[in-house]
Length: 372
Image (cartoon, rainbow, N blue to C red; front, side, top):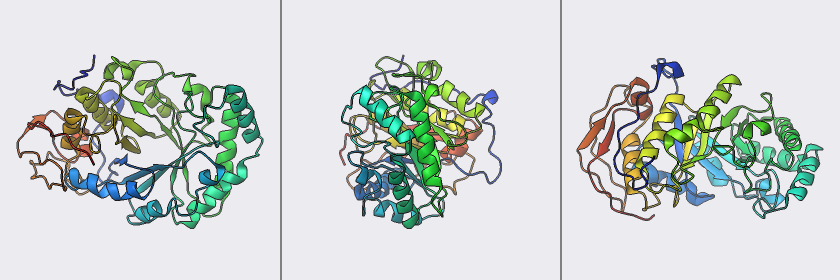
C-alpha cells in the first residue's frame, strides 16, 4: 500500500530489461517534461518560476486547455493562445500541448441521452467548422505542430465529451475532428488519445478511434483511489501496464498529459513510482498538474513528494551528461526554500540517469510549506 503520510520508502527497482528501456542511443532526444500551471498567460509566466525552483531545469513542454463553455472558445478565442504561441516559438525543441473539448457546455453535466445525440451530430459533420477554425487559428499563430488532446478522459463521466453514451458515435466524431483539422493547409498537428487510468465508466479501449487518426496514446494518471498502491495502479485492468502494452501493440508513443498526487495525500512513494515508470517507458512528454491537491510547487501541502520531484529534476537540462552528476548548489527562486547541499543517493539504472540528467538523490531537509 502507498504511504499516505509520504514517509520515505525504498527506491523503485531499476527498469526491467524486458521492457526495452536499455541505454539510450547516442544523440537520442531526451524525454520532454513540464507542468500545467494555469490556463492563460499566468501559466506561461509561472514556467520560469518552476524552472528556477528546479535549479534551472529545462521545461520543454507548455500545457493548457481551451475553455469548453462555448464553441467560440473551443475555436480558440482571439488573444487566448497568444502568450502560449509566443512561448512555443521561443525554442525549436519546445512542445505545446493543448487540450480541446469536443463539445460546448463541457462541464455542465449534460444528460447521457443528450450527449449521445450531440455525439451523433458531431459524427455527421455538424461541428466540423469549429475545429477547422481552431486549426486555422493555430497555424496563423505559428504553432502548426501543436499536440492536440481532444476529448480527454472520455472514459469517465465528468465531461460532456464523454464516450460512454455512444462509443461508436464518439469514435466517428473524433475521426471527423481529426480529418477537419488535418485538411487545413500548413498544419502538422499530432493527436493524443488520452483516457484516465483504469476502467472508469467504460473501458477506454472501447473508445479508441483507430491508428489512422491517433498519433499518441496518453493517460491521465493521478494517485487514486484512496488506498490503491502504485503497484496496483500499474497492474489494474486498463491501468498503467495495459496502457503501455496497448500503445506498443499499435505502434504509438505514450504520454502523460495529467498526473499528480490526489486521494493518498503527500505520497512520496507514488511520486517515485511515477518518475521511475516514465523513465522506463519514455513518454513523448509528461506534464504534472501543479495545483492543490495534485502538485508540488504551487501547492504547499505535499512537501515530501515535492522533495522527491525536485531532487529528481533539479538542474536537468539537455546538455547534462549521462553519467551521474555531482550534487549541485541550488539556485533559489524568490520566496522559495533553499535545500542543503547534502543528499542521500538512490539507485538509478542507466536510462534513469539519462532521463533525470544525472543521479537521483533524496535531500535531507524538512521542506517548508509554501504558496505561489
